Amino acid sequence: MMIKILFICHGNICRSPMGEYILKDMVARAGVSGRFDIASAAVSREEIGSPVYPPARRELARHGIRCDGHRARQVTREDFDRFDRIYYMDESNRRYLSRMLPRDERKIRPLLERDVADPWYTGDFGAAWSDIEEGCRRILEEFL
Image 1 (cartoon, rainbow, N blue to C red):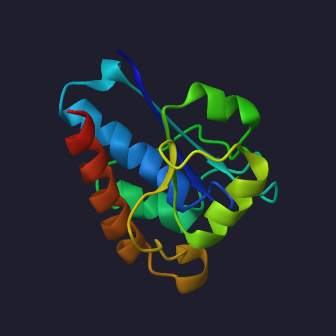
Image 2: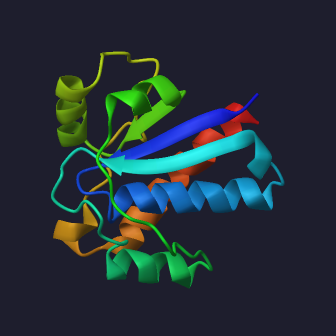
């Protein structure tokens, strides 16, 4: 059975693509890539079509992870139907999602019990990496 995971953040250029590519790397290293469909999207339309933000791309590269070809997109109602789990990064993302998608707390949940601070504003991509990696480890443990 395919496990379908979607990561959400504000613009889909920092935190959610980091989640997407970190989890893709983890499942590849675990030898279970074929069991997962992993993607990311934004709650806003601000960055549609943009690549991963350069500091986020550099943070991924520091850990040996590439994110070539990523283009930001906005979450859709079809995503709600397609994905088993939709993980958002902070309370603001949750509020947007509550207006955009049906409410389903089993499907739509925070990546962590605390907000993953937005490195677009904090400039701390290392802290974002640590938080997102922690959340991805928990996802992998849950599904494996």
